[in-house]
Length: 299
Ligand code: ATP
Image (tube, rainbow, N blue to C red):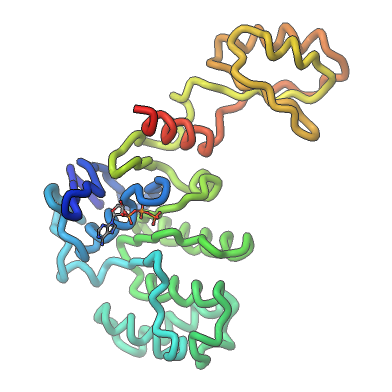
């Protein structure tokens, strides 16, 4: 288990991370979310020991993270750091050796990964000759070649097309099944929503929301009612508890303050015609994220 306890990091006078604490259990996927400059990369760098926290403590299975345990960690950096003049094979041998692996084992795992990512033909090609997406696959392979116990992924999906996003997600889920702890950052809430179990939202280095995704959604009082049919929009807008009414191409979304206003909205909808849908849904993580980040900036 990864345990981050009250870490704070200053760059000179600038507080980049402010008293941050969280835990990532084995076999769990944890999301570290925040806008640009929120402190995500700084947090990752402290976890892998590239930066020393100004105060606070980070441990993996109860032990401090130093060179004794770094062989069990995999890190995908945000700035892609491939040695572009090397071939894919040379690059992965380089990273695998750094992690204390034998060449035979590295090459065996490399072949498996290249096959899985459908890039077997690039094994002896120079990295610079690969497309951006394929370079990212190689970067991912270099982060996981040692079958890490703790996998840290800084913006793993940036620049990937949907097919490759899916492929990365499947690979990450396999690490979860094997019991690895996974922590990743993203700006894309739909990615987080698809496979992360717990999360923390950072604003200016400070946590403004943390916990299990399911619980966060449950606790968030505002709800969305999705309606299909002919309804008096103006009447909906004037209904008590209604915050907003969105008219999309094929449905109406009514945002309400909380569950207690569902009846009021239903009262208006049942006077409508050709109603084929009335469903109350939790807000998207994106809505929660925007509202929490907005609130924090207003303070
Ligand atoms: P992004 O999503 O843009 O990558 P981030 O959430 O990863 O952002 P960080 O890169 O951790 O954020 O930056 C947090 C804060 O620390 C910012 O105010 C940034 O300007 C500052 N910062 C980051 N690295 C350094 C550094 N090496 N020296 C000084 N200040 C830094």
